[in-house]
Length: 329
Image 1 (tube, one colour):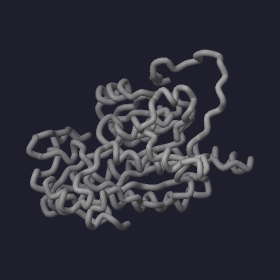
Image 2: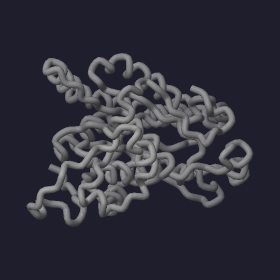
Image 3: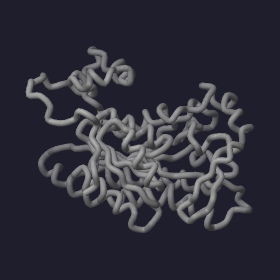
Image 4: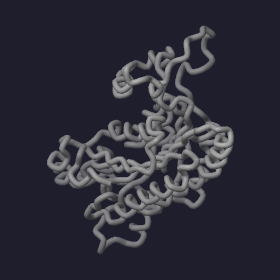
């Protein structure tokens, strides 16, 4: 059993009864639900602790891969703030442990190279051991290893397929026996219980990007995976959707001149980032005039993982700031 962290003060507490709080997604429009949902981040933690507000993911357990940094970290934090228990995952165990310790919510950690053959099964087993069940999986883990096509090795090309396409497939396959059997039992009882997979794609996959033939191929392949799983698993009330991100401020899009590197699962040293000249083009190609923050990128993931999106199925949500060429599927 993995150690599970709970935020300070969580426990049995006092015995005074409080009226049952209302879930935001149950509120009728004429009571202001759209405003409340849009401005949830402005509500104080005290209101939630007092029972005045319930999170969109209360009672849910989520796996977020690659969740120690960047978009994954922001997603894990947002999910925890919305009431979910979150399994933190990263290639680097120390970084994953630190992230889990810093997130205000109930977390567990499973670190390691997800591209290994049985890694996805172990990831899902770790979440089930920690939380008893899994309701949401966000396939976010990944990195870039750029190069022009005529100079790219087979290893460099395959590495992107492994992490961006094969790992999400294996995570879904590992969840299948847990989710499909539960859904069959619920269907026999006349219940509808929705579970969620959110895959992370990219505008590089949706429209191609010079210097990223490997990454673009892998990110478009995960779109095909998403749409096919949606057709196969809709009968089990498993929503499968994807987000395609444009320019988001992370270490993968930082200035290459900063010289940041990472070590691939196979031990290769990979330069991270993009040239500053390309970063400067953001205001010209993004109508909103700037890249997204990881926090802004995490909000659409929350939407797709929440009951608000129960009837959103097999879709790719482009999150681009209106970036030219990134406004279509």
